[in-house]
Image (cartoon, rainbow, N blue to C red; front, side, top):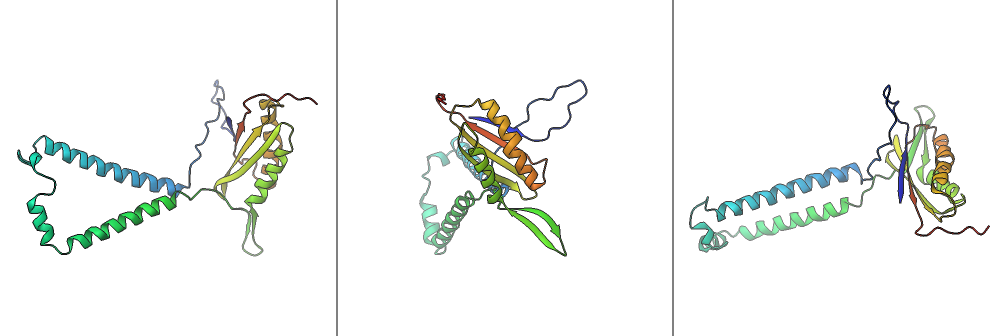
Length: 218
C-alpha cells in the first residue's frame, strides 16, 4: 500500500527545497482520543501505585512482619464482619467500574466522519449544506471509471468546516501507480475541490497495489 497526502504546502525557505508532506495520522474522533488518554493515564497511575506499594511491602518499608502476613488477615475479616455496609459499597463500586468499561467500549465506535458540509451561511435565505455521501459517492464513481482501478472508497473526516478527503484506491496492475495517482489528484480530487469551492481541501490518497502485475491483453 502506498499512501500520499495532497495539500497546499508552505513556500520553502530561501535556498531550501520543498520536502515531502508529512502524513496526518488517521485517528478516531477527538473526544475518543481524549477519553483513551485519560483512561489509560489513570489506569497507568493506578498500576504504578499498586506496584510501588507491593515493592515497598516486600522491602519491609511498612514493617518487618508485613510481607509474611496474608492479604486478608483476621483484623480485616473482623472489620468486614462488623461493617454491614462494606459489601454493598463493593457492589456499587463494581457496578460503576463495569459501567465505566462499557462507556469506554461504546466510545470507541465514535468516528470523526463528516456527514454534512456547510456551503453557505445566510441569516435571511438560510443555510446551504451538502450531503457528504453525495460528494464521496461521486468521487468513488469517477475513480472507479479510471482504467487500472478495481475499487475506490472515499470518506470525509475531521470538522465540517475543515474536512479531510480520504481516498483508498485498489489497483489491478495494468496502469503505472504513479500515473494513476496523478490522474486521481488532477481529476477526481480537483473536481471535489471545485464542487465544494475549497481549492485548499486536503486529500489523503492510499493506493492498494496488487500482489502480481496484471497483463493487459488489450
